[in-house]
Length: 284
Ligand SMILES: [Fe+2]
Image (cartoon, rainbow, N blue to C red; front, top):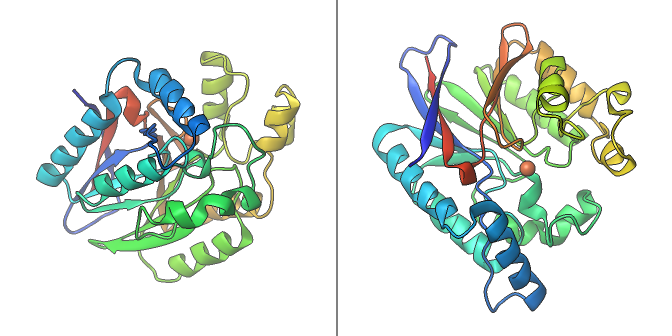
C-alpha cells in the first residue's frame, strides 16, 4: 500500500490543481539484450531496493491508478530507473505512457553500472539518446504550462547546473507564469544539511550547492562530486530571488522532508517510490 503525504502550495490559482509526486522508484530490470554484468547488477540492485518483493512495480501501478482517478498530473523527479538497460528504459516508458505526467531526470537515469565511473556531461551523453526515448520531455531542461502554473524540470543529478539551463530558466520566468521547479537533487539549506549530517548521521549531505566549508568533513570523492560547478551558485541565487519561482519539488534523499529554501519559498523532498511513498500536492 502506498503511503501518501499531503502538501498544499498556495499561489492564488483560480482553480486548484492536484499532483501526485513520485521519485526514486529505482527500476532494476535487465534482459538478454544486455550483458551478464548488467544482469548480475540487476539482480543485486533488485535485492537492495525490494528484497524478495516486487514493490517498485506494484507501487508504481498503484500510484498511477490513483493519479489517473484523483489527480491532474503525475510529477516525477528522476531515478525512475536505477541504471541504463534496454528493459529499464522500455518499462519506464510503459509506466509513463499510462498517465499524464511531467518529469525531470535523476542521477541514476544515466548510470550504466552504478558508481563505476566519474559522472559528468561526457558520461551522461554516453547513454542520453537511449534514456531520452522513455519520455517526450527533454531530460536536460523542459517546461509545461498546466492550469496557469508553469512546471519547469531541470537536470541537476550530478550536483550542478549548466549555464544553458540558467538561460532557459530565465526564458521561462519571462513568460510570466508562477513556476513550480522540479529537480532531482535538493538545494543546500542549513536545515537540510543539519537533517542529513546531524539527525541522520550521513557521511555527506547529497545536496546541490553545498558551501565549501560545509564539505570539509566529506571524503575527497564526495567533495569533488558535490562541488558546485558551472552555473550552480548563480542558478541557485536566481531561484532564491525570483518571486515567480514558487516552490521546489525534489527527491534523491529517499525520505520526506519539507523546509524553506528562503523565507516563503518551500523545498519539498519526497521519499523514494521503492519505499512505497509519494506526495499529493494541491496547488491553490
Ligand atoms: Fe538520486
